[in-house]
Image (cartoon, rainbow, N blue to C red; front, side):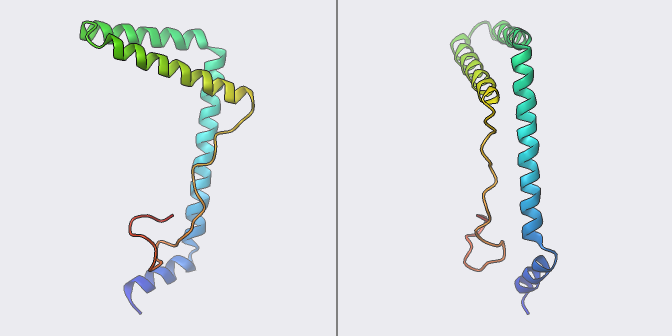
Length: 118
């Protein structure tokens, strides 16, 4: 039996694929909980969030001599837009879409692309 076959047999024996999927699902749930907490905080403390962003924006302008003011303004607008979207999705009860795809291949499949388990 080749080394690869031995590894596949051992992975099957310990249910490695299922455990990896369960771990991925747990990570997704933790990310959802963190996003939900961030959305709740942003919603309840928007003034504090805006104040912190204002301070960061001012500090960057101070340190760079307003050299990158246009870029900082664009980034700030993008951050504000994303915070608004996060709060809106949270208000609608829409959880973020899952980011862990279902397994299509085993890491030990001969026809699986190298370095790409899905």
